[in-house]
Length: 590
Image 1: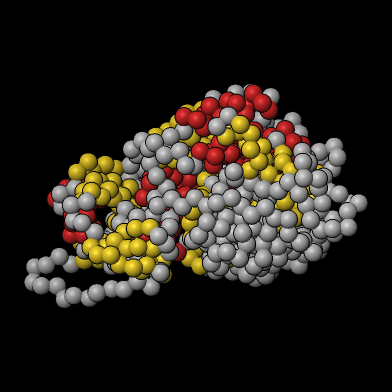
Image 2: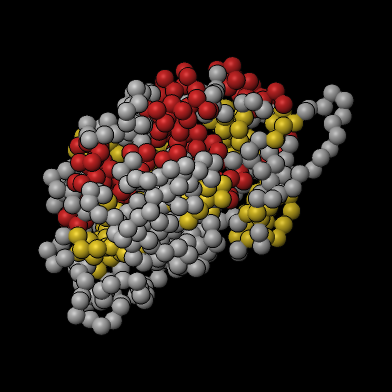
């Protein structure tokens, strides 16, 4: 069984939608559009209106005050040399400076209650107002219509017109989540490549029962077989040295019943000779009995803490489901609590869906708050190659999806982690990596290129251009995967669901080394990229490969089918992979 890259939405959407213009009657409500657009489903058959009495939970995302000021502060506080560098906000300071006012929140809450919604609640950072209601109440309150559809053998529901609010609330309400039924889609086992890797300079044949991943230079073939790593072997391969994450708190985003997950964590720690890390499960929403993602959360918990040897504490945020609404609230809990320095989410969805339903803009606000507070969130780039927007159970199969990147990985305020195939010498030390053929990566359709990518990402040389992903990469190929304990027994697991927690654990070691003063990772990591000669936003030419003192492994061989690995930054492995000790040393000088 494999840890799969989780797409939490099954609905494929086209972001064109439609609007119906109706002249308001005298005294009628004047409506204003939110960021929640019509969900025009692809290859779907309309089955009829959703029953009006059906219960429906909604989460209204609210607009931050002075969004440009928050972005400027996030930049200053995470830029070495700035007078603000390292002076991160507390959640209380964020709320006082940038959150919607109490009066704005009160007006939204009053409106929901007037429309018959109950259990109206406000998150502590005032970025969400949640409420319980029914379909008919939601249709009336947000001037929209909800219908059932048959799509891909499943029955789903979605709003067929944009969600709107009364004009008096339009300066406060950003989005309305909960109007579509974006259910979790778990993919099947990744395809067991071997695949031909013509760009690799050495043969990659391994015995089928190999327990470590050594290059076989005696073979004349270009294929390789199954092998795996344990946490101590990853530490050696990625050169963690004596570093640990002992002074840094980290978090995993999870869902469902985690009873077996924490048991498996203890089993794995004993098997690998690791210390037991303290953990806290943070419930987000109604408890769920779902265990379908158990292997995913096993992988996340065991390898984020495992590569770090230990961490100060592991927080496991446990939401009700992997719908956009619940994911948004889970990410916001990570931010508003601000108890974990960094986190990882090993799931994603085609970015058109969160763009259309409003999660993208609302969650980006929360992630901007995280950056201002000095937090870092990691996310998996996907497991179907450059066509990383998969809508069928084809995880691990390149060219099986659409040419679209995944969210939240495409968020500018998230570290997007791609995948490699990792190979070591006989003594377990690093030999080389190639870009994993099924690793996600590419150009975002909806997210902008952040300032730290300028002069680095080839197609994003100037401002307001498209974001490129991934930012970094680590081992993901199931053929060079990890030994993970699932239901008490070891299994070999891979995917960018592995690379993201590996990156989280690596970052925790760097934070501990720096006294937890590093903050949001992306600007710092990109500042290590050599850009000598960059003028007017034009990337500097690179040689093959990038050499010392570049602290990353420059992965310049392989491809994800849609994009090739190249010297320097590329759409398969980003900046490259960590030499943890070298990157930590370079960051300590910032």
